[in-house]
Image (cartoon, rainbow, N blue to C red; front, side, top):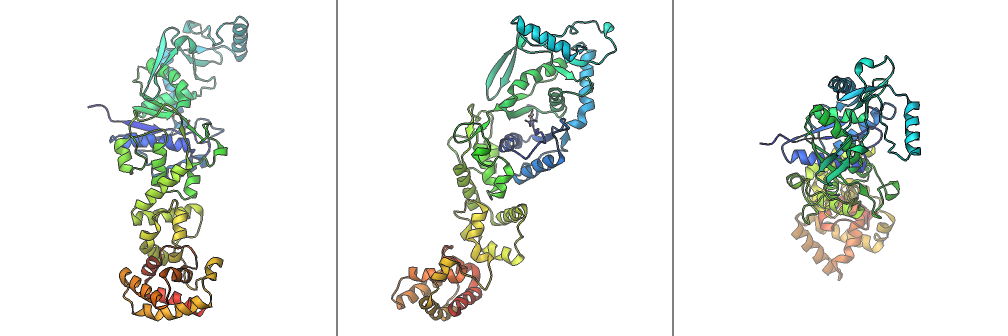
Amino acid sequence: MSAPVVTRFAPSPTGFLHIGGARTALFNWLYARGRGGRFLLRIEDTDRTRSTPQATAAILRGMAWLGLDHDGEIVSQFENAPRHAAVAAQLLAAGKAYKCFATPEEIARFREAARAEGRNTLYRSPWRDADPATYPNKPHVIRIKAPQTGETVIRDRVQGDVVIRNDQLDDMVLLRSDGTPVYMLAVVVDDHDMGVTHVIRGDDHLNNAARQMMIYEAMGWEVPVWAHIPLIHGPDGKKLSKRHGALGAQEYQLMGYSAAGMRNYLARLGWSHGDDEFFTDTQARDWFDLDGIGKSPARFDLKKLENLSGQHIAQADDAALQQEITAFLAAKGASPLTASQLHTLGKAMYCVKERAKTLPELLDKAHFALTSRPIEPEEKAAKALDDVSRGILRELTPQLQNASWNREDLEATLNAFALSKDTKFGKLAGPLRAALAGRAVTPSVFDMMLVLGQDETHARLTDAADG
Ligand code: GLU
């Protein structure tokens, strides 16, 4: 049996959870969850000037919204600095790294001379082959001994084999002169120590992979499976940016997209399973693989997101949808629904979740169930409540009192009433919508009556007739 899959998401906490980061996290989560593996979270907080606890909190909120739960403790890369330094020391002791005492001025002079002579400007330190016995007691960095001939091949599951000539690799610094580890070392040591088997990340890190492989090889560690995914582009094919719209995952939460819809959408952003557009979380977990990831950048398409969000809202479990609405209102800082509103919303769910692309659209359809008497009709609805229609409502109301409260009987009663008035039911609909919801556009009149129940319907119609 092959080793259990371990993936990770390794954001730098310098801002909100970017839509691209959310997709990277999702791909890693799906890959692990679909294989009984582990999905780990590491906060890459080594850059002390740019990392903030607020950004970490924002990333965690974004992941929580998307339901991307991670296994084990969150790893702080910064806290592992002593371990990173220890690995550098180990490489030094093994002769796979060396102390370099070159000053920044010497390095600059080397580069200038190389440029002037038209040579490769990669720095070649004279200390690479120095006898450690001759090391002065001076400030120094620790550099890895990079291979100088041959090739490094990154066997990438998305990009294919990426070949880098080793004479293009320099003796990368592992530890700075102040003893702090560089990012490249930190990533490799952490990934190794966390037992990461698959590194799925943006292809802006592809070049790093070649340098990271040097460290794996020098340490004799197993290289993980690489999968560098193309970045996300805007609908115009340019790199996704602010001018294409919202970039933060949580902005989509605040716009009211369903989390399941967003997951479905993000999964399709660069990955495909045949022609399937809509799928459940279970299907996504079962289907997700590295072979389905495309090589060219995916284009962000808001219409598609809306469409998928709507489909997920329509097929969501009512109780789960209620919870999502509660979380949505809380995230927006809006007042929570009262127990009685939640109760009526629960009853209304079947007729308001169809064709709502977002949660605010659903809440708008559910207005009749969330509002309470006295109903203030909106301008357009108020026009439907003229003297004639109020007279009609006055006549209709007692008849409804005798009706049994099911769809068939209500339809029969209203149709018979319309007939007796020598009109069509359609003519009654406007005043009824206005009376029951205070709106001109609402779910079906019968649905509203059934959800509101006989007493409330009667009361609202009487209010309108008397108004
Ligand atoms: N911290 C890096 C980033 O946020 C990710 C590094 C990695 O996945 O190896 O882009």
